[in-house]
Amino acid sequence: MQKRPRRSGRAFERLVSIMATLRSPHGCPWDRKQTHESLRPFLIEEAYELIDAIDKRRIKELPGELGDVLFQCVFHAQLGAEKSRFDIVDAVNAISDKLIRRHPHVFQKNGKPLGAKGRKKLGLNSPDAVLTQWEAIKAKEQGKAKQKKRILSGIPSAMPALVRAHEISERVAAVGFEWAKTSEVVDKIDEEVRELRDALDESPARAEEELGDLLFAIAGLARKLNLEPEAALRKANEKFTKRFEKVEAALEARGSSVHQSNLEEMDAIWQQIKHA
Image 1 (cartoon, rainbow, N blue to C red):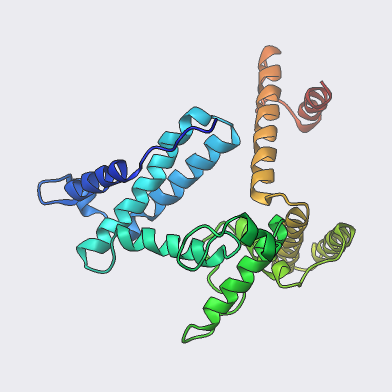
Image 2 (image 1 turned 90 degrees about the vertical axis):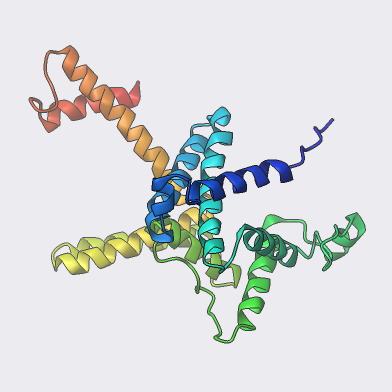
C-alpha cells in the first residue's frame, strides 16, 4: 500500500519564513549581503552535490541535498520579493502552470487530472511521444511571444558544454533533425576522428574546432543511446581515478612513487589492475 504523502505547505512556509528572517535587518550579515549574482556559484555547487549523491546512490543524503537546492531557490525568490519583482509564489505558480500546459495527456486545462479514459484517447503511451509533444507545445508557446524564439533559444550558454550539447541534440531530434540509425552516428564520429587527425598537422585553432565537432558528435551518440554524456563521463572519471590511485598504491608498496616511475612501469601496473 502506498504511503499517503504528508502535507508540504507548513514545512515550506517555515523555510520561507526562515529565509525572510535571515534577510531581515536583524538577520545574518552574510545572507543580507548576497545578490542573485553572488549566489550563482552556490546554486551550481549544490546542484552538483545532489547529482553526486544520486550517482553514488547515497539515498539517505538526498533529503539534505535536495533541501540545499531548494534553499537556493527560496533565497533567489526572497531577493525578488524585496525588490517587489516576484516572490516564491510566482515561482511555484509558474512551474505548476507550465506542467499542466505541457501535460495535456494528464491534466485538463483547469488543472484537474484527465482520467484514464482521456489519457487513452490521446494515445501518448511512450516517453518519446511525450517528449515530442512537450517540444511542440513549447515551440507554440514561444511562437506567441513578441519576439519569436527558435528551437534552440533559451539553452543557457553557461551550461557545462557537454550538457548543453546533449540538450541541443535532444531539441533538434524532437523536431525530426535526427540520424535514422545509431550506426550512422558512429560513422559520423569516425569521420570527425579522421578530420581531427588531419587537423593536428595544421593549427591549434583547427584542431580545437575538430575536437569540438568530435565531442558534439559523441554527445549526439549518447542521446541516441538514451544515455547522458555528462553522467557517462563522470563514471569514467571515477573509474580512472580509482585505478590511478591503485597504481600509486602499488608503486608505494615497492618503495617508489609516480614521481620516481616512468610511463612503461605505470602502464604495466595499470594493465594488471585493469585485467584484475
